[in-house]
Every structure is written in C-alpha cells, then in structure tokens.
Image (cartoon, rainbow, N blue to C red):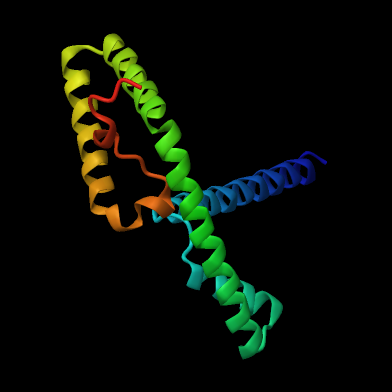
Length: 145
C-alpha cells in the first residue's frame, strides 16, 4: 500500500513540476516577446490571416484596416504625450529620487548605470517610439507645466 501511495505521490509531484516548468517556459517566452515591443501590423495580419484563413482579398482589406488603426493609435499617443508627458516625467523623476534615497552609494551607482543603459536602448528604438509607448523626458526638460 505504501509503495502504491508513494508512487502516486511521486507521479503527481513529477506532473506538477513538469506543468510548472511549462508555465514558466511560456511566461519566459512571453516576457522575451514583450521586450521586442508590440507586434507589427504585418505580424498581426499574419496571425489573423492564419487563424481565420483569409483570402488574399480579405487580407488586403484587413491590412488597410490595421494600418488605419495603427495610424489613429499613434495620433492618440502623440496627443496623450503632449498633454501628460511633463506629468509622467515628473512622476518618474520623483520615483527615481525616492529609490535613490534608500540605496547606498554603490547601489545608487549601479541603479543609475542601469537607468542610463535603459535610456540608451530607448534611444536606439526611436523609430518605434510612438508604437512602443516610450517617453523621452528630455523633450520636457525645463518644462514647468
């Protein structure tokens, strides 16, 4: 009886570990994809086209709709950043200041270095800035509004 019970417990434990590993792997893949930014219009179209088995004509129509949606979203993003950019940047600066206040000198240096690397990566993504939601607070430097 103990052997059968032990075997069942071991099997359940193994299944749990495998399930957790699969979920972890999927989360890792999702996280890696997130760092690449949102899918492009072409990637969205490919996914939709495959899922719905669209004809060539439907794909062309879908592409036009997705491109218009992307343009409208970019325009709304620009409007939002023009209105709220200074406030968002002020909030970021306050948060960074609060974080730095709890760090020792070595930790603060590492934190500032990581922030600078993040800013450099954001600068390299300038061509995608409107799509990815990045905000360059240097655009609002000295803006007291």
